[in-house]
Length: 101
Image (cartoon, rainbow, N blue to C red; front, side, top):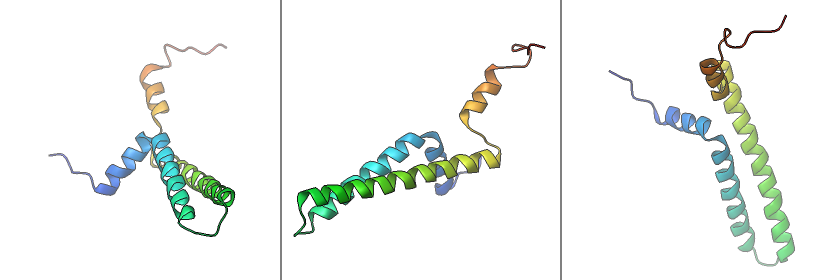
């Protein structure tokens, strides 16, 4: 009987499979939240609100990319590797790609 995966394991696998989508979603959510927060604060100029939203988006983008890099590093260390290596192992064999001597 197959083991059921935990919620965290399922989420981690989804993030591994959809890294760019996860980073983009986090960025878009962060920008929207930052704009909503800044617009709720009276007494600030519109240009200052936009600048603050941009700075928050940059910080969230760096955090999301760092998180994605950590997930990739963890997968590499745990031995599962990236899909590029899996496809390379599947389609490229030593016999089909002789090295020149």
